[in-house]
Image 1 (cartoon, helix red, strand yellow):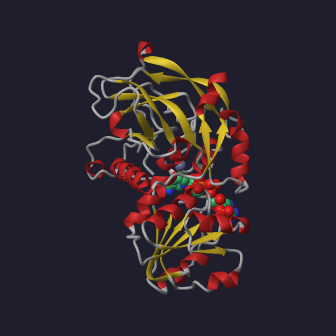
Image 2 (cartoon, protein in one colour; image 1 turned 180 degrees about the horizontal axis):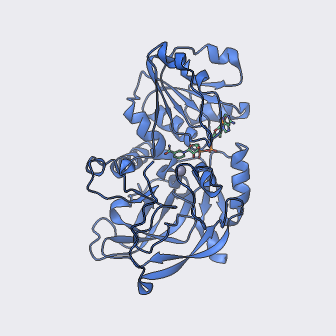
Image 3 (cartoon, helix red, strand yellow; image 1 turned 30 degrees about the horizontal axis):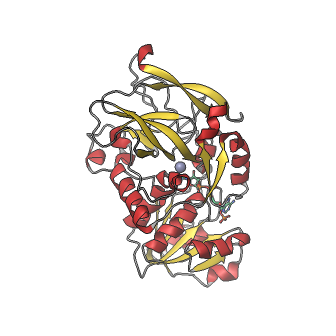
Length: 368
Ligand code: NAP
Ligand code: ZN
C-alpha cells in the first residue's frame, strides 16, 4: 500500500471550500454518526459528484477501528467509503471526460503524482504518492481526505470513472473496490477458460471474484466457512463449493488449483489452501487480516508454489473492469441500507451476515 501520510498540504483557502454532510467516527471505539466536513470547490480539473450509493467494504471497518495501525494509522475523525457512485453536479473549466448530469464513480484512489514509473504504466495503486480516497493526505485543504459516506465529493477527473448505463446503480457501487480488487489479480495471474480457480471467503470481495472468474470462463471452486452460502455460491457462478471446515472435502482438491484468491478478512490457516495448489500454482492474498498469517515453508517449496498479494487496481484497469461488467451485466448482490444502519451493518459483516455487500442509499443522509 502506498504511504499516504506525507504532509504536503498547502495553506487552506476558506473561500475555496464548502460544507458537505457525512458520517464519521471520532475514535477507534466510536460509532459512526452524522457530521459536517469540508470539501473543496471544484478547480479546473475537478468533477463534483452528488453521491447516490456507497458500498461498505470490510476495509472501512478495519480502518474505523484502526486495525491497520502498523501500516496506515487512522486519523480521526474518519469518513470511510471508497465504493462511490453518483451523478456529476459540476465540472471545472478544463474537464473533458464529464459534464453535469453524467453518472460517475470513484474508487480507492483520488490522486497520485502521475509522473513516476508506476503512474506512467497506469498502475497508480503502486505510486509512492498515491492519495487514498479516505485517510489519505488532502493536498488541497490540508488534513486527511474524506470518503464516500457523504452527500458529495470533489475529485480530479483522472480518478473519476465512467459507469456503463445498463448497470443497477446500487449494485455497481461495490465494483469500485470489491470489483477491481478481484478483477486485477484474476487478470494478472492469467485466469481464463480451462483454469481451475479457488475463491476463499464468500463475502463482498469473494462473491465478486466468483462472478468475474466465471465470466472469464474458469472452473470456479468456492471455499466457505458458512454452509448456508452453498446454494448462493452456485447461483453466483461457482462450479463447486467446499465447506472449508470439512477436511475430507478439502483433501479431494489437493494439488489441483492453478490459482486461488484469498479474500478472508480474519485470521485463518492459509497453508490449508497453499496445499491445494498445483505445481507452480499461485495463491494471492487480497484479504488483509489485522494479524500476520503463518506460512509453512514446505507448503510452498514442495511444488514451487507462490504466495502473492494484490492491492486494488489502477485507473485504466478499473475502467476496463467496469466496461467488462457492463458487457457481462455483472454487479454486486447488494442489501441497500440507509446510512443510519451503518453501525449495525458493521456488526453483521463481522458475523459474515451480509449477502453480499451493503450499499448505502445516500439519499438517507438528507434527513440528518
Ligand atoms: P467481507 O464481506 O466481510 O467478507 C469476508 C469473508 O471472509 C466473510 O464473508 C467470510 O466468508 C470469510 N471469513 C470471515 N471471517 C473468517 C474466519 N475467521 N475464517 C475464515 N473465513 C472468514 O469482507 P470484504 O469486504 O470482502 O473484504 C475482505 C478482506 O479484503 C478484508 O480484510 C478487506 O480489508 C480486504 N480488502 C483488501 C483490498 C486490497 O486492495 N487488497 C481491497 C478491499 C478489501 P465465508 O462466510 O464464506 O467463510
Ligand atoms: Zn475496499
